Image (cartoon, rainbow, N blue to C red; front, side, top):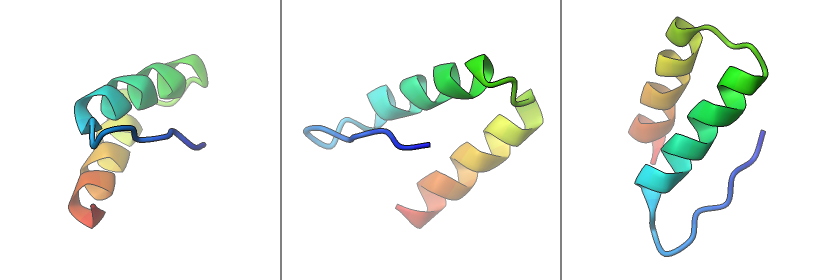
Length: 42
């Protein structure tokens, strides 16, 4: 899965990622874990 970040708008990227993850059927726990890891890396 890939989402482009424009103008350092991380909040928008997280919203888009959540929507994509929900549409693909990922659980809430998986989604939160992924977002936490993504934020800590960046």
